[in-house]
Image (tube, rainbow, N blue to C red; front, side):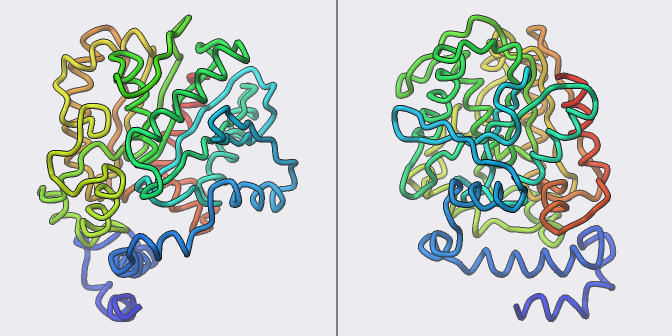
Length: 341
């Protein structure tokens, strides 16, 4: 809180060294201070489970909850009509430590409504994966594959009618799913696709666990969090604080371009979005380059977008903050998804 009070006075003098608006600059300073001071037990105490948040969100939004319970006990929650022609399977962010929040669900509900308004009969299915430290990698990847196996093999849904998406750690998980389908991870059950997924969108994907790169310095006062909390979360997710604990599935930026060539057999089109002001942007840009060379070189269609003066998953933060007007980053992602469904 003290950081936010100080920022109230210093923010007008930050210029482009700070966030894109006075409100965000002060709010981000407060978020950095709070997130960096908490331990895992405190994060768990302060944040209800995804399924509990979903029940309350459904009540507040006026729709009846509709949940899939998989054989493992893992749940996935529908936002919209589960019988819709098109399904967005979504993996939420939060460093693999935080459950999904109501802002993320509102963002997804708005995206679903925008798709329907554009004539695309669409619903969203949100995976309530088990968070760390209770569950470590590759548990979340196993649960994601279990959900897709249920949709494709049990419900007989056509992958061509399924779009995959995720923000931050959920973007990491989405990439892990694509990697596993192209190069099966021996620690995770396999899934053979009858056809390719049509599209995938990645919002500020957490592709690198390296917090000692230049964007963590240049964007230190522009983003909502910093390296302290990311090091805590990645160690909880991997079960190790070693800088070499990640692999191609959990830390995608470490994979060479050739590794992504096989993903062209899994999905047709991929959008990768990043904010120019986020601390993760250097890792995202490196992943963009390798993915475009590998996946794109093998015939996949890649769209990359970096929005100036935008922080980590800016469009979701805008929804959480109560902004009524959709910003440029929000429009880029939403329009891309609408056009691919």
